[in-house]
Amino acid sequence: MNTHRFSSNPAISNTSPSGSQSPTPSQFGARKLRGWKIAGALFLVCAAAVASPAQTLHTLVTFTGPNGAYPSIIVQGENGNLWGATSGLGGTVCGTLFTSTVTGVLTTLHSFECTDGTLPDGFTLGRDGNFYGTTLYGGTNNIGVAFRLTPTGVFSVLYDFDESGGGGGNPAGITEGTDGNFYGTTQNGGSLGYGTFFKMTPAGALTILYNFDSTHGSQPFERPTEGPDGNFYGTTLNGGTYGGGVVYRLTPGGVITVLHSFGEFSTDGYGLACVLALALDDNFYGVTLYGGPDGAGTAFKITPGGAFTNLLNFDGTDGSFPSSLIQATDGNLYGAGGTGGANGNGDLYSMTTAGVQTILHNFNGHDGDAPSGLIQHTNGTIYGVTESSINYGSIFSLGVGLGPFVKTVTTVGAPGARVTILGTGLNGSTAVAFNGTAAAFTVVSNSAITTTVPVGATAGTVTVTTPSGTLSSNVPFRVD
Image (tube, rainbow, N blue to C red):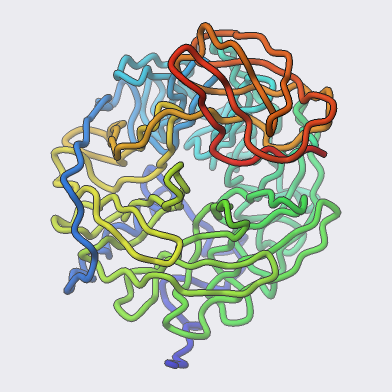
């Protein structure tokens, strides 16, 4: 095995983020990873990916500047629409929050004024039906805020980040835990200057659970993923034993364990800025921005206990600078190369859990450039965003032949707990069951059902009987 070490890699640094290595808009452009795309053209070498049948990509929304620029993330709301954020422009150039129908009718809900945040870069649907997110900059101290957006468009700042007294700065998104609190990371600040891991109540009361110390990682660039064991799993861009970032596990009480430290071997890759995807096999899947034999990044699997497997080495023509993976209802993982591909503008691909890659679409600049932010809607279609195109980015859809399903907003609950089920074509539904145990329910809309976990329910699939047939949940529901 190649034992080349990357601890002195010029693209990443172990310097405290509170110093000169702290990211700035000029370094990263409108989005935190935008600047890294430039170097991707250096990695256009021979490809070894499986060819795919033709997939049809549709551009749904084109951003023009006044309606926002550089979309960063989208999620599905209870009304079936797409909800998301742009990192720039809008009415005050500091970014926007928007909603769009799946046919592309866009409505701007909030234009950031910089004092209430700028560069929104995290967005999630809460179990209460509201949306929660963070901004990378802006706010009173210009190091980010946490915010809430109601489905009717009412915006409020929940927490204004402040590095004084050891607080963190530049938050990197939040995840709602099974306890109803939100968990996230800051890229900078904390008592040691390498970033923090925090808990925040829905009302905005924030507690620092862990201060990164470089040895256990530094600059966590994305939100954590909660595992079935109730612990949180995440990645850092830098730090660890070899300086190339880590995959970590953190308990709700703030005890950290490094599961894998990157940078020791070139085949591992290094530099992580991904949300870990928890797959149906209870393992986590992720990507590195750099490294591998061709320097264009890697895809990997890691178990909750830390057993690490390299699955794929990107070589440029099959994508480079990959973004976070998702698992779709066919069991395959779907991802995007932020650059590279046949035209150098990035691509979309699927990958089996064994690492067999299939290219689905190569962007050409006119249909988008630098794709990211993939989700699978409950109608079965893959949606995502491009950072730029002939204008300022886009929202796109990609049909991959998958049918509709249902998704619970939370995947764990005790008997009697309220659960929202998202879906498509839910009007007229006649039954809801948790692993075969019938549950009382109310059809809220064609896209949402509210129910409660029935007494006697056991862990397993949630099903909804609709006029068109029975739909099953994409992940098992755990009864606590």
